[in-house]
Length: 195
Image (cartoon, rainbow, N blue to C red):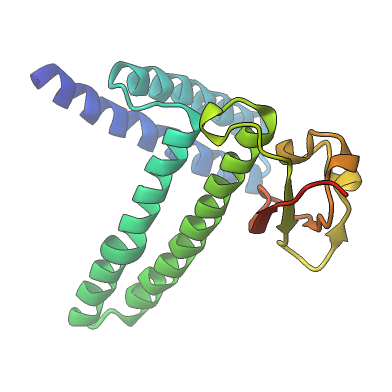
């Protein structure tokens, strides 16, 4: 038990070091010190490998479905408890700048939580279509409506970027997809038979 606690502390330190080096690299780059920035980025990448191994030792890595579930739990905690509590403490101390900052972070974390929840739903559809999750049986491919920006795309346009569209485009009916700089957000899903 002592070893686990020590490994958890080391994990937090390694994770913080990774983030610290990435921020330091940004500053070095802004100052025109590109070589130093590159060294710091490589060091941050090295720290990530340390984090990964420690997470494995602590059994903190699951399959994608489990990992997304853990991420949703963390974002929910940040949205509903951590940042609202910090906002309240800042207000008690009459520090309005920090209070606004924590309020904004809570809103951002809520969007993360929502996006991850939609990805969790997309995973269910993707596994269903790929046959990797037997609990969904041999259902017909799902018609997916995705929206993340005002640039509608056909499945053909995003086939390379969306694992849910790895099936033949002709297997989809009424699929509307939208692009964004992050994973696709699933707005609605329905199982429809091809007509």
